[in-house]
Image: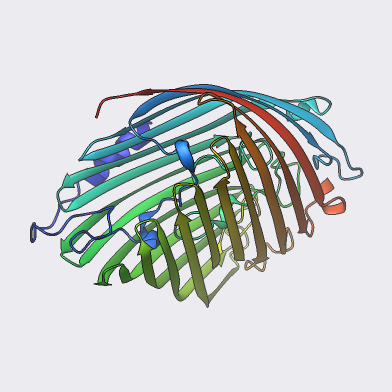
Length: 442
């Protein structure tokens, strides 16, 4: 949270342009003739997953989630396939507050994940998010987000479809876990400024920094810690009611260790966004990307121009939420050494069938090809496929039960783990959730 405070101060110190026509409003959220939306490619958030009574604001909440799961392959032994049962007990707390000028959303959960036989995988499970949005003036909005996770991924969540959904820009290659059961820690901090300087024109920019740490680094061939930092700037133009065009420039630096690599990327996107309604939209992005990847030890380097393409679509009604996205860029890859040509696609959907029954399903596909010649011997690349389906029954506003099934498949050369010989994992889980909410004043 201290990092968030520093980041807020730094962004707030940026001087603003002069004010414009009274009709201009920075970061508007409604679809009308005077307020500009912040198009999904530059908003930096995620498509919402909530359905039915899950959508609420101005509250403080808490609860407890107890989960039991069976995994038929936990990928810890390169010579045999090992199955195990794990349990987790995770208390949760959340705060949401919205006023005409600012919006704050905080959530945190922390507990224990315990394995019945493979006790070396026992550990603390944590997940926290902080999202703050503030109107500096009527025409300028600053937003800051921080996401922290420890041993928290698709294969240990009680409800994979809670929280944020597919990112509004496109799925992130760094969110793909090629070692799903290994103890790991990650944090992403980003922030930005949006300024609507005319009735139909907006500019903005921001920065981001993320880390990824694995406890098995040094013991597993091809597994690496990573740091990723970057900055971006955008221009957006409303060409008609509900249609936006614009341009985005993005810079990023990806470093890995203990096998060292450094990759810089520069990308220019043109984008088009169409709002069918204020909650249904699609976006396409495309443009050139240049990458420069280096091995600091040998001094060898490689670089090239490559096309970059992204796209996303989001759909939400009172009882249904759906989102999907695709990304083809050069990026890091969730624990692998070096930088990769990545093709990542993901889709999620939830439906409130009746007042007490919800169903959900989601899947993702990721294909990676190493672009660093001197490092590709550690891992030339591979692919990951994952999917989850769940059914949820609410017995009251506070008490619900969920059962689900997940499947995970991966194939990576020179990865030195059980995942090389036994690439598939199936997980069946059941969870019981107790939660409460208390309204707070505006």
